[in-house]
Image (cartoon, rainbow, N blue to C red; front, side):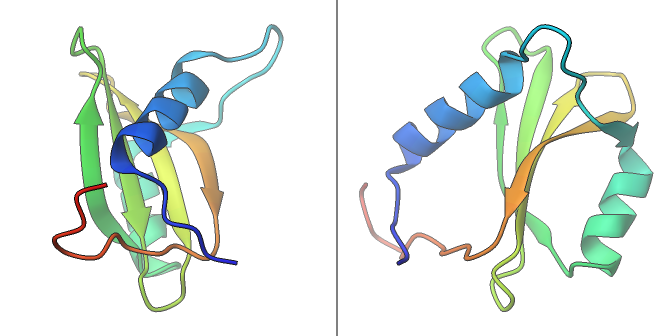
Length: 101
């Protein structure tokens, strides 16, 4: 079942996932150019949304392929040249244009 999540709630959840890593857990980080090439080449994904943390230290990017439904969220620490995988999945549903939620 496809459920549209309000934009504010979605980004709040993503922010919590991106900035709270359990003790001992490691986040998979890659060279940004390599990550971008993989997402565009292998998965056909493009950036559909970008947010920056309040202090500007990290950006969050939502990549998606609207045809296949794959999606990926990357944390991009400012000035690092890295992209860190936050989460990914299937069944991406874009928010309808004009939907205020």
